[in-house]
Length: 249
Ligand code: PEP
Image (cartoon, rainbow, N blue to C red; front, side, top):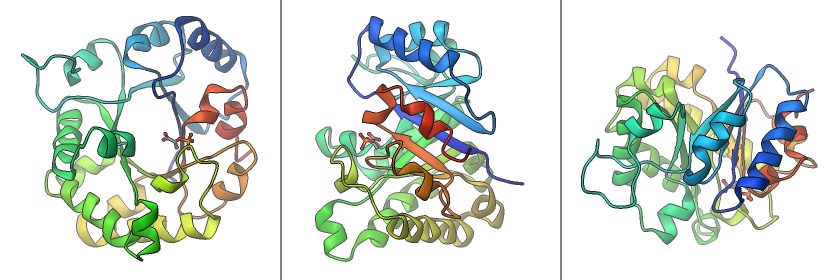
């Protein structure tokens, strides 16, 4: 079974009701590669608006979710609430949350499990800092982050996980990983899936790249055998996001 190309747009803490309406209007009228699974993640406040405006072929993702079902957790969103709002995906473990909000591997793993248990797909973000890359620790770091999740999930549950490899030094910096750097890590993640999870997970799990992807660099990256799509930050707010969704046309 061929892996369906997956492109996510992470708006982060950007946008207004008007600008998000405009972005979605552009996506709705554009010709999008029907073989790409397109998902957008606006700020939580605008998820319902975005779901009401976006063409059904565009899925919605939350940028975060909590690991508990409901209750006294001020400021958090539950998986059931996302389901209720027809949000099909959530990001988990974005480096901005791991670094700024001090989310550790175990917490990210629990959120991943909670999302899957509640019927939401998880876009699991992993990746190393510049210091870790320069110290030759990239593969150790991504493996450690993945091992924490593997402890919580059954092999079958990986079918609803998309792994986003996002080197921290490439996020929002304009410094994209080379095609060789991305392919090397993606291939290692796929090998890890085969050894630690199952042959089916290695074959079927989408591994997408994130970090300064633009309409200019996406085509070369998309040609790599283990790059199954992108998670896009800054460029997802621009009309050129359409070109990234269509990177293989
Ligand atoms: C991201 O936030 O997931 C991201 C990859 O950002 P950018 O594309 O802006 O580097």
